[in-house]
Length: 164
Length: 126
Image 1 (cartoon, chains in turn red, purple):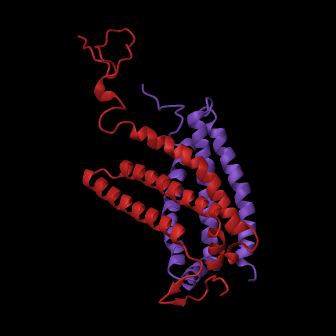
Image 2 (cartoon, chains in turn orange, red):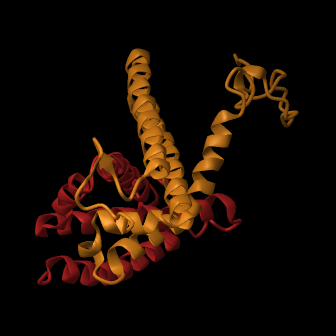
Image 3 (cartoon, helix red, strand yellow):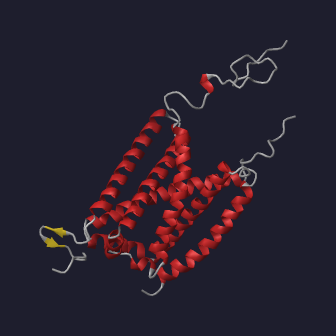
């Protein structure tokens, strides 16, 4: 006795002929409520990855390898960089791309290893909350940075204040 | 008689271990990134607060930590470019193994150069 097993990916029962190529809706990878979000996330990882290689290698070279390297890094070093819109934009792009790239990577890892729905949900809530806070904080810091900070009308020591 | 699956591209070999390495380095870099944005944000608190915290990055133990972090970043960067080549280059999957050894070779070269420069600066007399 033989049983006919339906080919899982074809819309028609198996007839020995090659599949028509029609895919049953429940086996489609796109469509449904998620749209093609996962494909866009996959593409974003590759595009942002290429840009991040340039941004981060540049960041490491300028901050660690040039001149006195790490010894040169202090408040004045940051002030000097962010006086230039070029480095403001560089660091802003690095912040956003790295955070979104990293968040999507950790999201993938959570989806892979957290098996309970509730665990996955909570881990992702924590992840997205941390990401939101860090991106907003970092963006505000880059754009509201003051090389000559003043507290209660008194200039803080270590600032770069213009001569009166 | 069933035989073990032979010739699979990824299981238990270079492909799988590079994937494991990519995950681990990715997570390490992500958690450092969270801390690094927070420590840099101290420039908005006061110049002294920032300079004090950044001073913590300048001791010898941290110099080794920074070298490890850069090692993770450089591997993740080069292996990421390899993944892009596997996905988009017609012969990418065929040559994924050779590309991994290229990644590791470049990684060694870059890390030898970086370590000499960074450790001599960080551990040198300053």
